[in-house]
Length: 351
Ligand code: KG4
Ligand code: ZN
Image 1 (tube, rainbow, N blue to C red):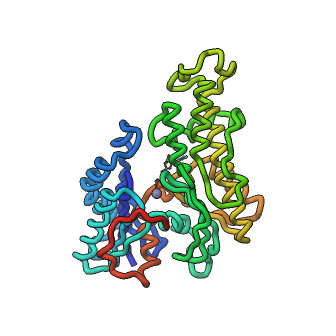
Image 2: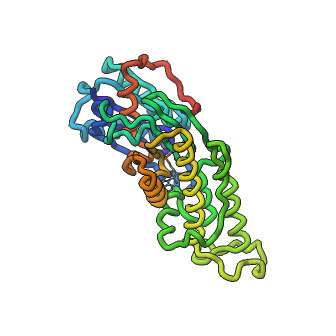
Image 3: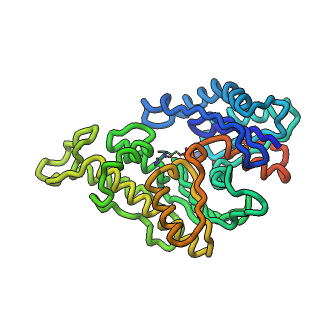
């Protein structure tokens, strides 16, 4: 079964071909980061126009990479939400058109559900080697969700962020520091020379009994720290609004601020994931979404799982950030029960 997947929910235009749910034949991704960087965030109008310009080239690229033609496709899938409506429409309409022209099923896929099962692509998802049940932390620019999965399409949302998503916090803190967009990779890079214990930023909701998250307080704590102390070596000088004598004698470096902020986020993400697994008696942990590329996060989660003898499922970085492979892979598993979802509309729902 060859499934063509399309992903256009935000600022990546992607087309992928996945065979039988796990065999990744092609995953073409075109990122619009350079288009949106001057604005410090994604501009929806520019995003949809770029998707429209690129979608046919990306589909052609994916088929060429997979060494297949349209006639080799058995189904087509596209993200229906959540995401930017005007961007979702591009992938949805392209996917529906291709499916209708070929006379094959069209499957509309939830972006977050695709992230949730993405660690299973190219890994252990064989009927005889099932990873279920597992706890998955989906941690991206728009969402932070803890889910308990007992089978494909069978999952319970345990908690989610009450305000900013973890990736959003990375992006906003990077902006405060005058770093580029998107901020996550920039902060990840700068932490190499920073001291994660330099500043004691809050671990919001780490001890809260719920499985929910909150990152806006942490972002505000970084903002107040910078107002009071500034930071040396920054791309932008310390904010001048505070009198010199109220600034700390030994302002932390920009790398220290990055490392301390990142450590606070990682402590919360790993701590709450572990507690969810313990509470549910689950010994397999997965993580997905753009922030799960973060090196400190991967290392700390790996170490924590290793100490407990748990299995860890982490997708390779290219399958953590937005991609169509996860859309095609999930569609394969949904195919037996799927309607020909040609009347589907973009949606902003959760998983
Ligand atoms: O999953 P994704 O590609 O798109 C969404 O569905 O949101 O995630 C993008 C987010 C951005 O906020 C970006 O800053 C963050 O993932 N990100 C990272 C890293 N790479 C990407 N955050 C921390 N460390 C990274 N290395
Ligand atoms: Zn995503």
